[in-house]
Length: 315
Image (cartoon, rainbow, N blue to C red):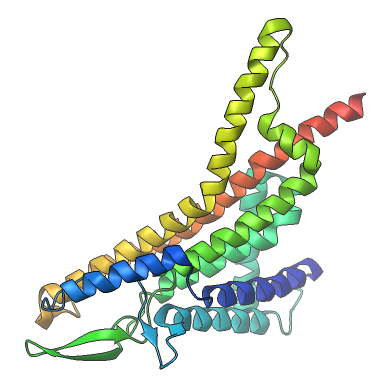
């Protein structure tokens, strides 16, 4: 029970970090996306059925808060509240909210332990489980009635068209997915250095694998240096691939739902319903994919050190 309470405390801290990072002003890449989206919106101003803008609409006079940030804070606060309520009066034999929360946490722990091992899961479980829980419920929150359909707009062709929604899906904003990917990158670097040390980390990337001698060993050293450089490029691009994979899938799903709602305005409440059930599954799969990819990336960098530890122990 003590470890579970420690996990819940870490959950609060990480969720608060995620919410804060999602609130940062977008970087140059995100600004470029916003500018492109603004241009696309201007070009489609005369088309009442234009698609979902890539940049989340900004709210208020200061233009600092956007509609995705509002949902981010709501999801984070509700998760924190539910976790605290579930474990407020913890019982030896759990029931109700405590039973659900412990079942979810223990299931994730057993699942991750089977993939990355007992020792590694002790150090990293707090991050992987928190990311999965947050992404899952953030994806599902974007499907609730009112998200994307409550806000400011104007009448077009006899129907009210929302131009600036108050709420928008969390992971349909590239700022949020990139923020989570960058947090993982920092954690991954820390775990890699902790497991291998600075020298072992460099050796893991550039060191030759296998036993060779003579001229072949010299050739293999050169080959693995080149392979190491490619690996460094791959590692640096991981935050980009992680963020765009999650963002692209969620953004595509929301665009599809909006297109179905605008296809026949009179049936805008009915046509998206079958696709909402599909997006429920997509939200689960994408949360699982993000967690598994980050877990496997961590496993790949940490298992090398364990092998060397066994060799040192034999000597």
